[in-house]
Amino acid sequence: MKRLVKNNVNWVGKVDWELRKFHGDEFSTNSGSTYNSYLIQEEKTVLIDTVWLPFAEEFVDNLASEIDLEDIDLIVVNHGEVDHSGALMKLMDRIPDTPIYCTTNAVKSLKGQYHRDWNLNVVKTGDSIDIGNGKSLVFVEMRMLHWPDSMATYMTGDNILFSNDAFGQHYACDSLFNDTADQCTLYNEAIKYYANILTPFSKLLKNKLDEIIGMNLDIDIIATSHGVIWRDDPMQIVRKYMEWCDDYSENQITVIYDTMWEGTKRVAEKIVEGIAMEDGEVTVKLFNIAKTDDNDLATEIFKSKAIAIGSPTVSNSILRSLVGFIHYLKELKFKGKKAAAFGCYGWSGESPKVLAEMLNDAGFEIVGENLRINWNMTTEAEAEAIEYGRQFVKNLGASNENS
Ligand SMILES: Cc1cc2nc3c(=O)[nH]c(=O)nc-3n(C[C@H](O)[C@H](O)[C@H](O)COP(=O)(O)O)c2cc1C
Image 1 (cartoon, rainbow, N blue to C red):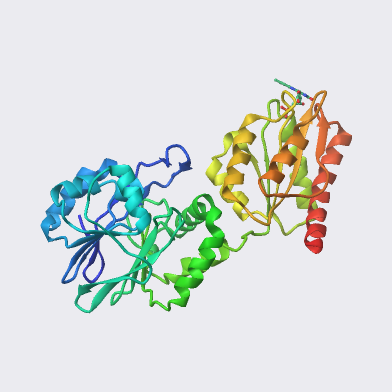
Image 2: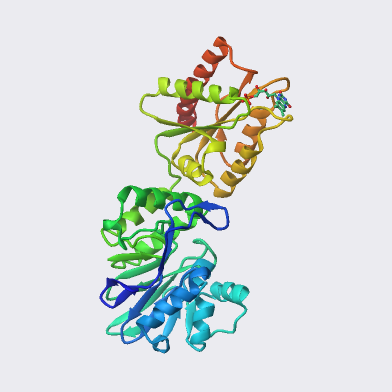
């Protein structure tokens, strides 16, 4: 069923209420998602993107119930990833000669995935297509945001930016628009999406946002490819992206640990106590990594100015949950964040050193000494852990003054 976006532009996508994992097992989507496709019916009929492969048949059937598929003059593929291009095979079987407009890199990604000889037409930034009624589509390449093939399409007249993955959120919502969605879920899903998908490309994004702002486009609507459409003050999400892409942090410290016999957990709790004692303003959060969603945790780290990570020593090293997680943090390429390492041990006690080396390698600045606690904490060790938390806060201040 098509749903009105504005004038002759309708949403023809799919709301996926049940999606809980995306990119295989990489991204948790606790609020579901949507695959947004848009149908423009001016003098020319244009389809912007499609939906994920499992919904291809449903999508093409729905579209065929709204229009004669032969009436589609052109298809815009803003990004070749299968969640947006997955229905192309089914659709192109019905209308094989319809021209597809995409970037030169999308030609590669589409051919690489589907091995079909479609009528692919390359566009680059600034190219435009007249769609009649005084309106046109203008293309803006968004290379590496988040694939080499990504682009956005701007529709003049209605002033709609079809931004594809940029500004999106994995959020299945009965409402199509940001102003009628649940604001808390919307914000949380938007920042989680940024933290987990776009952080590695923050520098590129900053340049791209400057370029888009420099184009002085009137933007009334930002129609993303996932989640709700930004209709009410659409530039609010652009302003947020400007903040998020600029080595973002809030006044938050996050303490993370894993444990076998809860000793490191108790140390973590004492460190949290010390941090809160030293700084009454800072938000301190504590997570057991074994009981926390990796993507939610990465979002908490995105919001943090500093983190402390703890693991007991196991076989002269650390618990493997933290190895995978710190590897993930390295991939995300966080900038300007500080870290400390701690943990319990029995006889050799390598874990804080291993953690600090891995965190350093992942781009975190290690401040202060590591904290090692032998076996379970004594009363003196508890005081030491509290003092460690206090000192961590002081070290952050000192490190800021030096930098
Ligand atoms: C499988 C296993 C391997 C361990 N390997 C080491 C080790 O190599 N070096 C060390 O100092 N302690 C080692 N320990 C001892 C733990 O580090 C110690 O019991 C610590 O207090 C556990 O902390 P937790 O209560 O946070 O799990 C090991 C313990 C277990 C169960």
